[in-house]
Amino acid sequence: MALPAFAPGQRVSVSPTGRLSAPEGSYNIVRVLPAAPGPTQYRIKSDTEPFDRIIDEGRLAAIDNV
Image 1 (tube, helix red, strand yellow):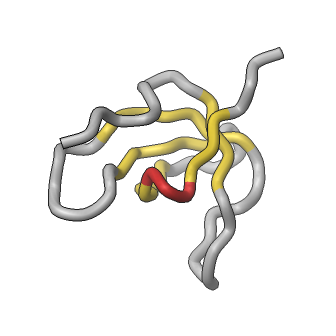
Image 2: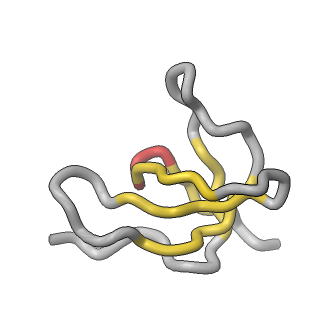
């Protein structure tokens, strides 16, 4: 099993796909979800939304903190 690519507290952006896509912008990794069949999943939170989202690792990209 591969290690997660992202860690809690890390800032990421989401790649849009399909009609259920998360809005553009930056998100904070809240936690890595327990291992299950399929891609690693994360609970993410935007500063502009009152709820968390669950998303596959392949749709996330790290944001460089400059």
